[in-house]
Image (cartoon, rainbow, N blue to C red; front, side):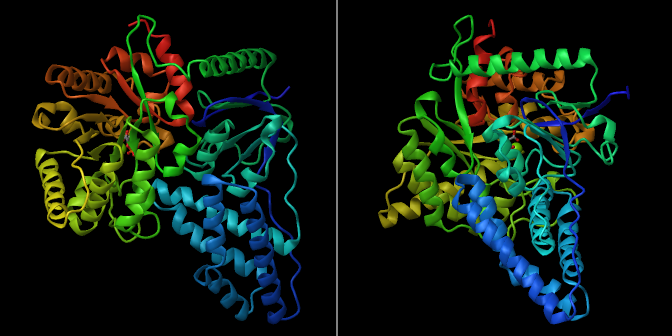
Length: 533
Ligand code: PEP
Ligand code: MG
């Protein structure tokens, strides 16, 4: 018996899968060169047409975020800026497959080598586009994976994910990948277990004698190939206990969250796209604790009307429950073309409120949209990445100026309560500097990375990036205590709020308000019910 191979990664979508390993990578298409450049050109044109047609068909069968991903790919494929260099290489004598691969690889390299998670995550879409056309060129349909397989490779294409029937189980284990990628997002919303960041030190191609059975633990972040019998048994126990916790959790969804000792905890949801609320029954949550607005700033800067409509939709969905909308937190791992600046160390650069204040003409558009939207519900607005009092004051002054201008023109508007994220250590250490804000919301993703000096998207320092480190918990507890003493509401909207393993520590730290991703709502409420405080 060969030795089992055990690899550690980062959980991107919690769950367990046991099945054969399916190697995603040796997907090299065979292509026969044509006689003339004109024929090569025709071959590439036809292949792009085939890939475009497939995408259009897939879009019709898909909705929501998945359709957005496919539409992005379709737009890229139809863009001459992407296809032009390949046709130019054909004119210079290259065969169609080499020309296409070369053109796309050059583009992909730019995305992959970016130090920003957002762009690295988009590299998967570009690879997907490259491979779809290469497959169409060689007329080779993708090798089929066995039912219930664990897809293993560098990265997985969104179209590959969407074409796969996950009803028989299965999962995803990636050497690279990112928990912020489109596929990770899809995996979470469909409950497909997934881990990322196994690293180059993992397998090259998986050894043939180990691919028979793999155990994927995407709750803790690990995969075992060729496991021992004892490992299989322990894995099955963990897997059924996870399934039992999941289904037990569903019974908590409809009820308000309370601990075993009867302490009430408000649980809100984190959203981005307004359509995120479509699948949520508003009665199952206490409102929206964080609406990220970066998504609106995708390809172009959004105008006031576009933003107003997006905010209004969420406010109307929530009725009288509060909706906390965060002003744009561009920069860091969320660059926005035409807005953010190129920086050596973007996590410590011009991001969040710093950038909004540096570009008031962009910020004022968002402020106007928020003031108008406030008429339609229970809006609260918060500023991201605040580090000093002056930033809050300047942002609040811009709100006041825009409100005054609206009042002169008789435009319907309401000034919402203005609060701040607590995600820069300077705020968590000295919250008294900010005692005039309307509320605090702890951004544990950033607070943890800044306290621990360990990037939130770097697998090799993931062991340091822990909210349960005493230094991080002490800061959270002191902000919660300050809020209680001053009667300033404090909530937490980082990913830890939805992590059942972190919830007891957060409640012990004094928090009574959490905001979690919708997919974790039931699990978070169930975890709260187990806390004895
Ligand atoms: C955080 O930092 O915890 C947070 C909620 O904001 P984001 O993840 O968008 O940076
Ligand atoms: Mg943050």
